[in-house]
Image 1 (cartoon, protein in one colour):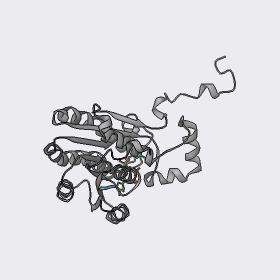
Image 2: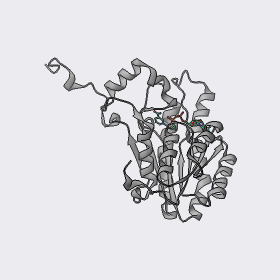
Image 3: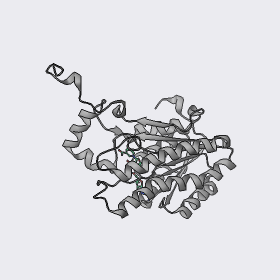
Image 4: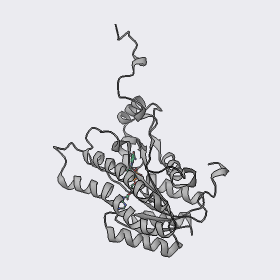
Length: 267
Ligand SMILES: NC(=O)c1ccc[n+]([C@@H]2O[C@H](COP(=O)([O-])OP(=O)(O)OC[C@H]3O[C@@H](n4cnc5c(N)ncnc54)[C@H](O)[C@@H]3O)[C@@H](O)[C@H]2O)c1
């Protein structure tokens, strides 16, 4: 990280849900390194506390299920109580569930929609009064390239993330005059505990090499820098945007790699 970005969040207070692991943890570390004080909220309370202990007094940790609106409201209030204000909210906690529509059990569908979509609504709903009271702020929601297009066998996740994207646009319009910017980050395949099986699978890695123009999965830190940008004043005229960070996957149509075909295939 260059010195130029140090202190970009001095005096700012952030909440990061799903902050104990992966993209959330990397973002907590990034925000703190640039001067923010951060509430780390996660279902994994112990991991959140370990991270807060590692980062010191500019952080605090709360065990939280983001699907519990009352708990989310209490967490936002506790953040303001502890740090005196709220400027940035990263609604990032998420899960996924594999299975085509004719295979997926109804409980899994509801759980994914609850954690990945409803909880983003809860997080925004609970945060907006505090942000408004503060004169404004920035919300970043974790969508996905899976919210922009379909994947094989991920119907609940695709639907939830598409919902996050369009919810983000509506929130951006509704709260622009409250001086609250609302954006989303749309990661491609990123190495975290969510994708652990893919990271460890030789076959999956071969496919990423073939299908991703940059020929690799991304790193959580590469999403954290995009989130930090959207949350910062560097993005002061950006709202309602879904920032794709995917090594070029969605730049492609999905057609065969014509230039790599050795024979004159068009003859
Ligand atoms: N890893 C990827 O390839 C990828 C790609 C696109 C989008 N995403 C999204 O990024 C976000 C972060 O995922 P990650 O890859 O860092 O995975 P991760 O599993 O490392 O982190 C997810 C975190 O969310 C927490 N969490 C899950 N359910 C929760 C709940 N009900 N309440 C509170 N916390 C809860 C988990 O405890 C965990 O700490 C998710 O929204 C995910 O859908 C991930």
